[in-house]
Image (cartoon, rainbow over all chains, first blue to last red; front, side):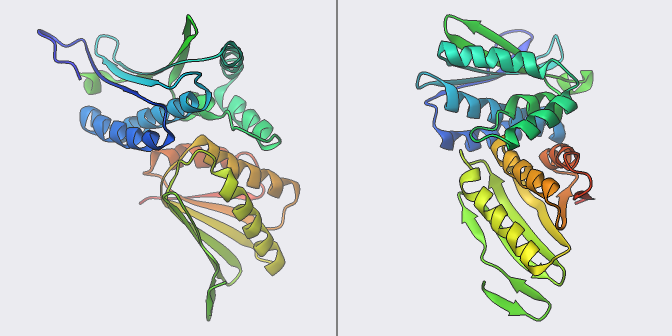
Length: 165
Length: 132
């Protein structure tokens, strides 16, 4: 967490680690505890930690290089928490992600979630439910940035004025 | 099968990577008590065959309900959710019993995931919300 001089506009937690599955549970628990104290809002803290966990799982499954990066910022000016997971990815994975983003934003989130569940049940392999789960269950906005083969996925949570102060 | 105690019978539990599922038959109901967390990379590898076995137990015994008690399950990742989706989907196609999800409304993932799961097959899935 930063401690800049003067007024803090953004507190953040930042982690870089080799994408090992066993770290994800530790990160989820840490994030939940951290935000439980920082926000005094158990539900929001658990939603943020769920989002961090789901995004990290995707990064470990689909990253092309062995480094995971997580940054969670409390943006005080905008009253929001930004959970960002960044990793390198192959072009094919990036295209899949772009399609996924278009799909999950193409309809009412609950209906999209139910449809994706039904489709996933009929196919073998990965669930691909993580992003829509964050969108619908945690009520976060999702943003995808791609630059030079590096993918950043942001899950952005609004905070009420009181919580953010 | 481990033993029989009058009205209830305990079946072989499932234990893996921080998760325990204990099945027990009580009269006309099979109760599966889950504790720990589902956050392994591929939970379906173990959970899918386990749910299939429980489905068969319920059908073979002619039970009216299978109750999945999730209250002590502190987290389930989306791959774990998918295992339940697969179970619900099979049950929707071939109904045989009610699948009851007993969950704690104070646990965020349970309150957000379970009612949505129930909407997949409202005729066979019953979300049972408990406060604490």
